[in-house]
Length: 131
Image 1 (tube, one colour):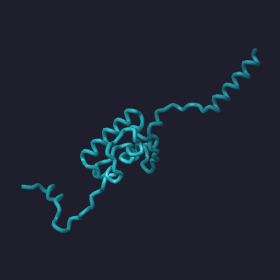
Image 2: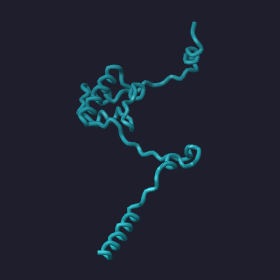
Image 3: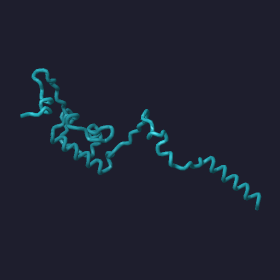
Image 4: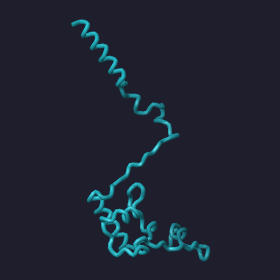
């Protein structure tokens, strides 16, 4: 007996969408051996945040995906590829933690460098007048 979940995922006769299977970059460029030193090839299989892309996305078969994954891991270990890339992100519209101030509520106010310079100059002039 099949569950509701399996029925929902099963194709419903002729109305199911037929999709064209992606061809792998390795097949189109006739790559026989995936080398960890070929950074240009490996970056095609990595997302913008340095995650290894799925087989479904890249069109690789199982063995190709396994070779790509080990080559990327070796290249990361040899510092040819980064483990992660820093992505700049601006946060807007979420507000604070309820009171509007967040973590700054408990922090002490520190002086700016200009204020520190002014206090140093005033103490220097005061000490030279006394001496």
